[in-house]
Image (cartoon, rainbow, N blue to C red; front, side):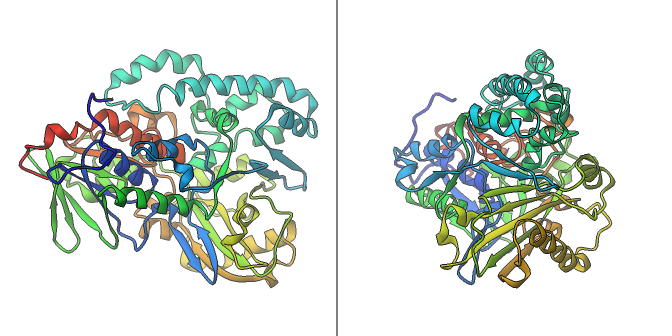
Length: 512
């Protein structure tokens, strides 16, 4: 980190201005870190509420978190309050979730994924006792990958290919050339257990059969810090961070769309808004989708690496079909996090990622926040969302036509498996599909997680946190290093401490 004075009281009136585009967790974390380093900060959010993918839908007495709901490395949130001498737990009430996930197979068998070795052993023995030793070896491998991939590399800027060259021997030693599924298969033999220990990439937009095994670190990360949920939902963290930022002099502007990042002589000069207003700044941090940032906010003449052609030819994560719904009864036997696996695993993933067709079957993630916080629904009711991975918008799928039918298919599946009589009890609902990811969240191709986390699009190969294209532009969020998921986007903001110059060095500059 730069040798400089942190400013827990916030910036002075003559401090340089940093503009943050987007108010997802990456943008909010970036704003906190820049404020604490003495910058004045303006966050520009195109929607009517902050949060980005963590937007909150409130209707009919129900509270639906829009997206990220699995809180793993909570210390990355705690750090943001600590920058200002505060304790997050005075503002956010975090509760542990048990089990971490309830995984239900198509035949009705259930695996309760949890945080202790003893608990996991007991679950594994229900399926294949012979895989217990292999599981322990897998966790040990996950620990080694975690110690390199998370503790050493997730906060490294990767601004030079030399950064990549330095870690190449470690990556080879840790078998990062393998896929997550390939690595897991070395340790456990039962097909269902291979699914249990390889599904994590889907939480960050990756195909377990294509995602680099670096992402196997998630297994140890969850073992180390657990899985948590904030009372009031993840929207309470969004609001808590907004309050923290505004309390220390930062400004959030809603319904404010950025049309262009302005540049002169190879250096950022600010941003131009949709209405024509220009905000001068020497530091611009984009929490917008990285591909969208380069393709739509930075003019072609300022881009050498991230050309339109490269952006179009890059590989993107899958999209999501998310049905938010409230019921007028409670489903008490549904866990907080449930993963419902369909009859196919690899075949379904091939349909989503490679063939890009809408399959007849699906695997689902069902979120029931009212299992932990009943206040997110009216009394006697439950709040849910169910998420189905689907192809991004390169697929030939007419979502205007398919939306209602796909929702009905999911509802019937839930009614037939874990939520009997569901069709009689839905009293509030909302849908987010790939078109919404494109139009409301400005995601290229409607991809829910930006660039797909394959090895050739990770670390140095990903859009850099310190832009390669123009001076003074920085990227945070799912589409830059280290990647998607809450730990990833919060880590991307942490990298800014290394690459954004000290505020004091810009005080006398003519811009911002």
